Length: 157
Image (spheres, rainbow, N blue to C red):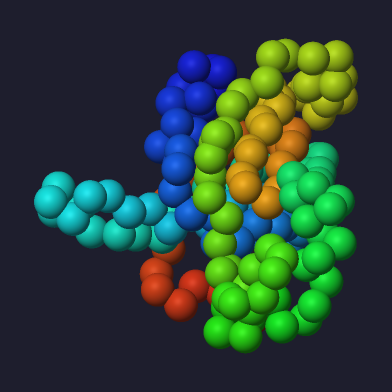
């Protein structure tokens, strides 16, 4: 997969809602679940999309919420929208993050080249930025698919 195609796929999630991210239950691939909506006048129905970053050898997540906001956001009532909406602090309980400024493919690096040589497949690095977290993923391939309502990625068979 070339970088231009990858960036085009990632551009689709700009300004949508990230509702889940983490390694799959088999722990090799990393998934990002996005709730995508459009202006109702377009007739496009909202949908959940799964961005599956295959062969993910490195996944880093860091907060983008400033320390001073964290300081006033430790109250457990903030993890539930109903109890946190009128409190001072970051309301974690909205249960989604805005994918803005979105995702971008990073330039090829020594790290991507090293993994490609070691494993024998191409690797990419992507930075996904939301209003609360920044993700950096090192992976080989991206697959995008819809997911059904009620999809629970942490359930094991």
